[in-house]
Image (cartoon, rainbow, N blue to C red):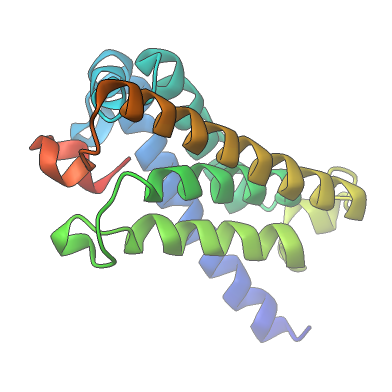
Length: 183
């Protein structure tokens, strides 16, 4: 890979990582206009992720922790997989594609970047490159992507069961909650 390509990958990693950190901080600490664990947990419960506070903590940690590691280029396989898995689940609370209509374009984009870095690596301008990929071995990347996909499938299926038991097929867009564009 050329130095220019590595620099471009650095910019993408830092930009997407920073967005993920901010989203996680909204959930965990109420930063950046977020609702913290309690408020986010209440919204999570309303859209079928039960128990809400536990799911808010897990989502916040995946976003903030995964985003920070993604930006640093450290443990990039597991970090990218955490972001990808979390954003896959987040996209299920959205309706349609475009974010302006409550769509999933933002979580889909963040998740795709996470998956791409997990699969392809962080580039030479990363802590993984500096440490000889000590925390980013090929088996770690593969395991993390499989684990993230399995976890996302489980969470999505559990949410579907909760909604079915409620007789509710309400999407996030219908709840009137400001979290509707940020699951």
